[in-house]
Length: 266
Image 1 (cartoon, one colour):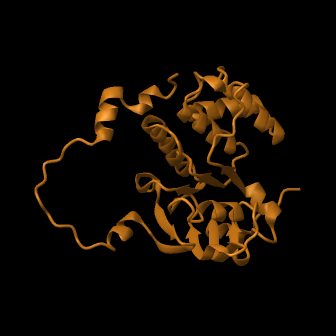
Image 2 (cartoon, rainbow, N blue to C red):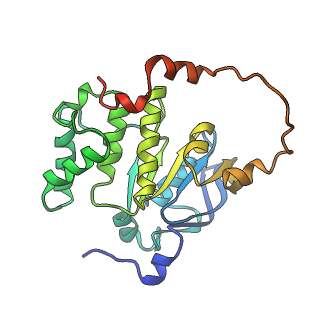
Image 3 (tube, rainbow, N blue to C red):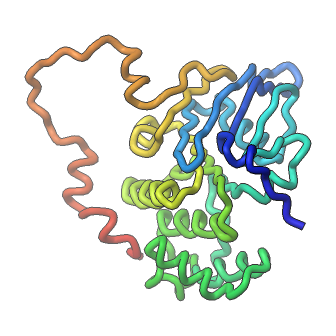
């Protein structure tokens, strides 16, 4: 039987973390992590490799137990109400978990059937359309580009309409065009009411996507706020005339075209 959050739980933040600590023998990975994520928002957990981002996600997804501290997801305690947490979330790891032998549509239908949903074909077709994969739906995933695989992976994670989704380094290893494709997909999640916790080591990714950004450093959250609030931590900018030269990114997209027009490229 499904576990449902109470009315009070539904009015609480989608994610509430207090005092999380985790060590592996002498290595202290988390040293008291605190943050909250509002419902329907994108929250970026920013940090370098080894900062503890994936450890936080694994604890919130009930895959790992914290040494101390508390965490609630969709109103459920990750330690004592794991079943409720698992029904509320979807986790997309650092590498796309898709079956390359199957077509994109077959991957989606398979997951829909595993979740015992009515009319898996309609569910699959709706998600293919939502993620601009309709034309590629009948092709084997082995023929997909990196960005297409990642979008399919995210689409699969949305089957069953989980209110909270964890995206762990969603654009790691992707080319610039594919990164933009994934960014567009992530923005669409929040616009549809899904709460997104995004871990990344890319500063521009957090800047492009997040409503709030927390920087995790040496096992602690050292700053947490909106992009505007974080910029206020630095001295006011001086107004100077600077001749702006195009960036390499500007040149790249000028040459190859807008990534959004090539969503179903080979």
